[in-house]
Length: 209
Image (cartoon, rainbow, N blue to C red; front, side, top):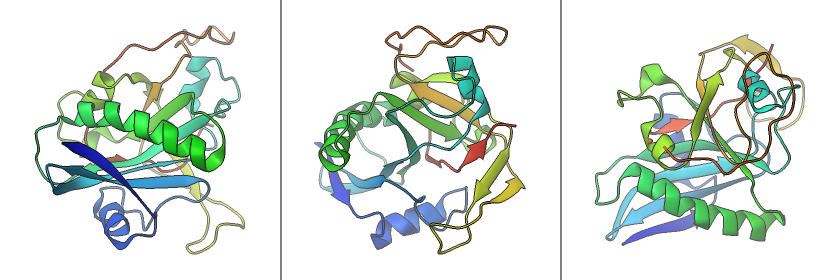
């Protein structure tokens, strides 16, 4: 049986999982966030985290968001890490987790999630198809980030952001917005997304030019 155990984002096992991740982050991002342990048949298989979306992502323009900022009620899956095998595939875990995360987020913050985002570095994943488990769980590939990112000084949730060149990542989206052609600046018409798969990854703050 698959289950999700809500934990603090400061829980040592969760922080250690983030630090083992290929992004090399030291902990969960600032802002609103949640974390869960993933259990199956009495075993701890991994961890998953949800938080506020990145400030700006260039691919959002292909969803009709011209300033590249997130739409209201957007969240970002900043880590999904499985370290033990099990019966349920990664895509199945994501589909079941969405229901848990929607409920827990609404209870904690008072609003319902409408848009889900995640970022994947294809050079660091084992899957031949980038984001395969996310695709199967209802996400669509939108486009590539610029590779520019920012962060605040370690240990500070406020203060000036430090900008740097980083890794170009692929953005995946789950929600009602439709991807538009690059030369169409109109806002997309809402629509229910179709489904599609991934590997453990973590989101960092990427920005549009």
